[in-house]
Image (tube, rainbow, N blue to C red; front, side, top):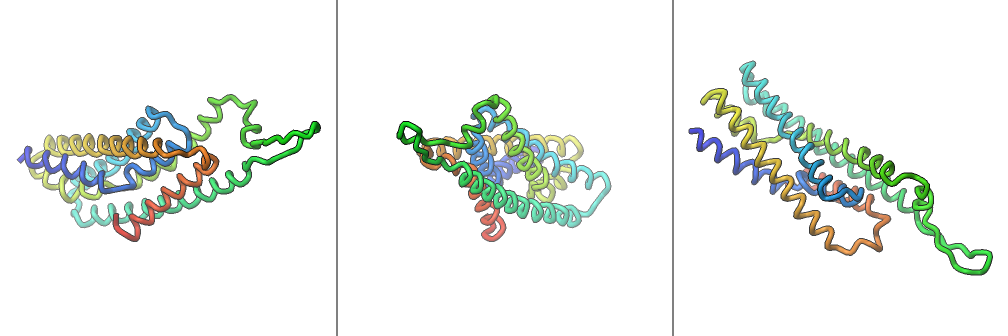
Length: 234
């Protein structure tokens, strides 16, 4: 029985993550727009992934201990899923609009110098010339990390409770723990692998000409991801 449960946990964790575009596209988009290093992006995925699976595991164990009906827990999961989807859509929309505003405000302007030469100024770059690079990067990273973390804590692992936790409970606490660990490892690993693949693909696209629109494009990608999940069931 344990072999069947663990195999099911592993396969569902991988498949559920691979077909759930919200598990990796937001990370790749935000990592690219905020100039996160590959290592930092993977670390963000890891932290958010841990929050993602932990919330559902805690809910499942809580339900098992209290003897809650599976329908009640599934109802809570469905509510969390709905909140997470609209949070994803809202965050994507707000971030896209902020990125567009930022891109328009930071549009390079042409000036004619006193000696008659043409000079281009990037006001965003000028504003941060005297600001330590590390400080600017950390500010952007913090601003972008927390919405992702909140999103994944809110977002449920839909198959975990009905398909894994309760069948495992019949086989004992050890089986519950083993299923939770296997499911978590496979889910988070799949999130990291899928994010890495998408990020590598994005890095192959020439982005120099639209670099100042990077935040707007990231917000658009997150928004489209949320809309696809909400209305197309992807």
